[in-house]
Amino acid sequence: MLIDSYGRAIDYLRISVTDRCNFHCVYCDPPTDRPARRARVPESTLKFDTFARIARVAATLGVRKIKITGGEPLLYQDIVPLVERLAITPGILDLSITTNGSRLEGLARPLFQAGLRRINLSIDSLRPERFFRMTHGGDLDATLRGFELARELGFQVKINTVALDGWNADELSDFVSFAETRGVEVRFIEFMPLCGPGWSPGLFVSATAMRDRIRRDHALAPIEADGVATRFATARGGRIGFITTMSDPFCDGCRRMRLTAWGTLRPCLFSAREVDLRPLLANGDDALREAFQRAAAEKPRRNAVLAGQEDPNRLDIRSVGG
Ligand code: SAM
Ligand code: SF4
Image (tube, rainbow, N blue to C red):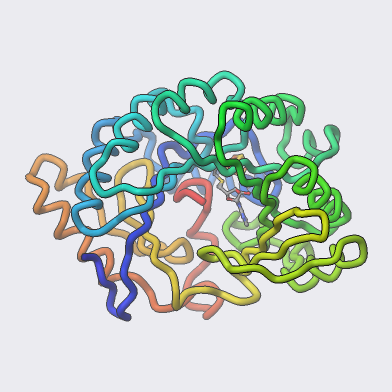
């Protein structure tokens, strides 16, 4: 088992398969951070069988849940064979992917055939022109076509929406109506300082403020929390959740570790601490197991950015994997 220094059992691995992305969302990839990121991030990413091997080792240590992320994971050229391998990894009970959906229409079927059943789809606006501006070029119709096909095929789809004042905070109730009519859960995420100089406290909307805005149009009744999301049902059968990373951090219950696209283990999204697996890849699996244990021992107790102990300019969600 992977137990960290504060007694938290780690059973959830997020794998970033690429830091590349075809979108440049305002809260994730601001142009001001790009030169610094190019300096931070190595060019080469791991081969799919190496990701699969590391996942297999993690499963022997008690990891039961894997999320594939990025960057945009559907740009990774071996995404389908990787999913195929992860889906049959002994011990892995829950496999999902987080995507911007731009390539989902073409890949939903092969991904389903490869064994994927759960998708988190990021959509920050339901208005095509605003979606285009928030993503710097994204096509809402293409993402929605991917969404509809995924649902038809039988995927369980959840929508992720980062709420930003002055951008999409006036659309929260529209997203709730979308959840109701489409029968999907929408999760509203608080903006986090993980985009270098793109962070701006003026854009931040707390989960409490989001809830208050939504309650003007929709009655909300609390339902069982799910992992890190506080959840509510609406009178018309919609389901929504709030990820309160900033206003009510869930560090005490954090069971996650992250694998970067280039092969380092990051025990916390809000810390640049990492354990490099690359020099160990030529050795046997025991060396990798030992590296996972070291990474667990390095997991900070709390969000070091909120505690003022980490420089957020050294971090970015897009490279490490959201
Ligand atoms: N490209 C994929 C996507 O957009 O779903 C996967 C990677 S993206 C980094 C994963 C998630 O992180 C997305 O839901 C995105 O909205 C979220 N995210 C990115 N930057 C964020 C930030 N600064 N604060 C909060 N969430 C953020
Ligand atoms: Fe790309 Fe996802 Fe970041 Fe948007 S949130 S820029 S889609 S990695």
